[in-house]
Image (cartoon, rainbow, N blue to C red; front, side, top):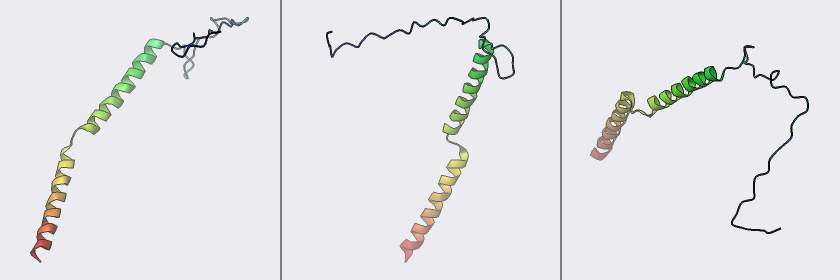
Length: 87
């Protein structure tokens, strides 16, 4: 057995075949009890991801409310600075 540092070992396969497995009886089922439809699932998942992505994009925009608060803070700090500089 040669030990080599530069190569990865081959991946081991799992070759177990169950004796009593019947694929027809083992169909995936939705929570509602209906047969699992991968197309419907993919569509629902895509809508969910796109809505999350849109909400994250909305959060990343620089809203007017933030600008107003920043301007208010700058004005208050400017007022306090001028008040303490006069003394």
